[in-house]
Length: 406
Figure 1 (cartoon, rainbow, N blue to C red):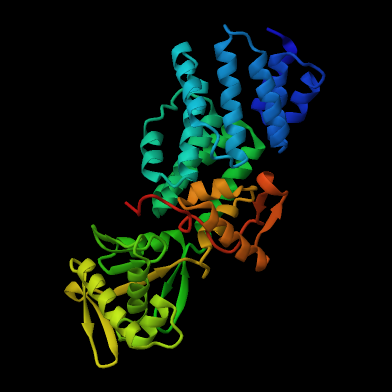
Figure 2 (tube, helix red, strand yellow):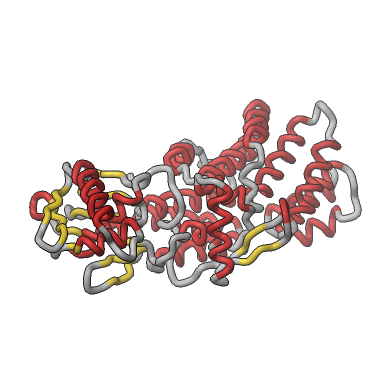
């Protein structure tokens, strides 16, 4: 083995990219290029890192499939860090197959973790949870155990499970300490602070108070009727009515829940659901139609009753009604939640993560930029959007998901 390559690899494993560059900075052989690329990624120069890794992959011969697979895996990690969600996942799958065929269990685990992290960014929580449960980390290095525990922590947060999140965080903290990597320990501590931040608001007609993720979990587990504005569902115990694709119905439901146990005035319902400043007879006719649809959707959980001044919501079994809303009031809260990680996102990556069109994302970014909450870097196809980390609340319940809490 080349002693310089070996020493540089050990430095990168320990999280010391400068020491690695000191060993291989002047070399242009494929192995050195790959290590230089990983070092540049650790230093934050993602563009240079990807260029070096591609040169390294091209430099390895046709028989050096394992080395090329490692370059592809490193490039996939750089793409993930740069929020390039359009980077072809097929290449990472091929690299994983090579690791399995050649018996490289450590890199196979690393590749699987990258796949799971990409699923999380895309909001595919169920798939990420299933893949994470299948990981075998008994004999793996501590750094991979720490990353896997952080992934489990993120999954638990996105599902609103505070107890499981704390367990995963304890595992991550212990594994990060064993790894001896300072940056990894700092990442774990940063993740732990989100458990103490407000994750939602409990709203009534007279007040609004913040809730931590543990308090949110307690509300969701209660026998009460919970109108969850973070996931746009109504739930009571195991029964769930999903309204994420019915924004008008959910707007009506949230207004009714906010007014509970009193009534919501007809004009207030019209303003909230239709945005009409001056309600007219056509709005009132449409309101009757939409409330009939909402009544049909809520039949297993609650009833809607007409009153002299409007409508009221009555949960079956005389249950209490609770309204949970996101910790911040913004129509573009999901975009802010994604940008809160401090990384530079492209509009195409944001659209993939949110499951919407690029044009919709561009309109949201324009509104946020006008309000001074985000800023653009570059122009044209290379333009990226950046926001300072959002402080004062946890973003986990604002992040998009293809499924509601399970």
